[in-house]
Image (cartoon, rainbow, N blue to C red; front, side, top):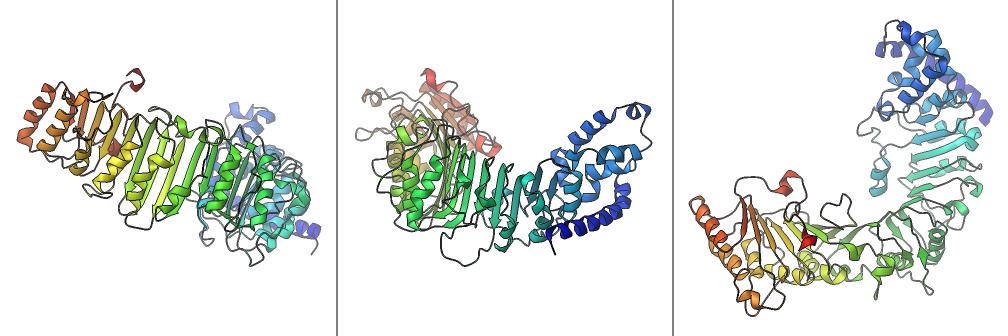
Length: 556
C-alpha cells in the first residue's frame, strides 16, 4: 500500500476511533453550560487557553479520552470549532495517541510535529537497557505497545515538519522510514534494545544527512554513521551501548570538534575497541560544556576523550567505573593537565565520600562551596574485590587534584564495620593537606585513633572542626583525641591548628550518666562542644553532612 493510500485509510480509521472516543470523553468531562463570561471570550482567547492547558506537563500523563485536545472538543459546538481550528493542539504524537497519528497530522496543519514513542523516560533508557515489554510510564497511563512502523508510516510524508522524534524499538528494520530530509528536526532520540548482529561500526545515514536544525541527539544501541553531517552544531549528545572499531575514534572526536556550542555530553558503554589511541592528540575547546557523563567507558577511549576536551571551570563531571580498584590509577591519562582539560576539579573545596559495604561501591562528590546547589564532580566506583575500598582510600588524593579540599565528609552504610582498615584513613587524609573540617558518620572508634596527634604523627594539621556521628566512641578515646588536638605541646608542631569545634550526634558508646561529665571536661579544653545525643544526624535528615559545621570557613 502506498504511503498516501495508507495515510488516507489511516485517517479514516482514526476518525472512526475519534468518534468512538466522544462518549468516553463525556464520562470524563461533563461541564455545565459555560457561564456568560466564558461565552463572551473571543475565539482567539479560547484558543490560547486551550493551548496553555494542552501544553501543561500533566496533560501527557492523562488517558487519551481525558486529554485536553479531546475533552474541549466535546463541550459545545463552538468549543469544538475552536479546537479544530487550533493546530497547535494536535502537534504532539506519543504512545497514547499514536494510533490516531493521521488525524493529528491532518489537524495540526503545517505546524512542526513532536513525536515521542518511548516506553520509558529517556534517562532510564540511556543508563540501562529497558525491557520493552514494560509499556507504562512511571507516572502515566498505560501505553499501547508501540508499533513503530504502523505509527510512523502515515507520518513519513510529513517528515519535513518533524521537530522532535523520540523512538524506541526492538529491531532496526523500521529505520528505513527515516530517509527523507528533516529540515526542522531539532531533537532526535533513537533507542534499539536488541540491535541486529552486524559488523561493528556499520554506517547508517539518516534523513539523507539533511538535518540542519538538529541540536539534541541521542542514540542507544543504534550505530549512526560517524562520517555524516548529523553531529554538526549539536548542543546535547548522548551515545550508549555502542561498539566501533578503533579507527573510528578520530572521526568521533572530529564530530565533537564540530560542536563548539555543546552543553551536554553523555557516553555510556561506549567502546572503540581495546587499545584505541591517538597518534596526533586532538584539542577540542568546548567552552559551553555544562555536563559530561562517562559511564563504563573502556580505558583507552576514556583517556582519549578526556585528554582531547578542554572544558570550562563550571563543568559538572560524572564518572561511573567498575573493577577491582586497580583501574583507579588509569582514570586519567599520564601527565594529565587538569588546569587545561578539567579545570573544574581543582576548584573542589567540599568533598563527600560515601561507601557501601553491602554493595561494594563508593560515591565521591565534590562541590566548590558548602552552600553550592550543584556539584562539580560525582563518581560511582563499583568494586569486585574485598580490598576495593582500601585501594580507593589510598588513591583518591593521588588520582584527583583535591589538595585544596577544606571539608571532607565520610559516611559508611554499616555502623562500626572496619572496612577499609583504619590505617587507610591516614592515607586518605594525607591527600588533603588543606583539610579544616572533617565529618565521620558510622565509623569505628579505631578510625579516631588515626586523628590523635603524637610526637611521630601529626595528621590533618589544619583541622579545626570535627564531627562524629553514629560511632561507638568511648570516653577514653574521645578525651585522648581532644587533648592531643588542644594540647600546647601538640600545637608546637609547625602549622598545626587548634581544634575548636567538636560535634557529636546520633549513637555513641558513652554511658548516659557520664555524658555531662565528659561534656564539661571537653569544654574545659576550650572546645566548642555541640552534643546531640538523641537527635538524628544531618545525613539522616537528608541535608548536607557539612552544613552548619562551620559558619564561614573562608574567614579562618
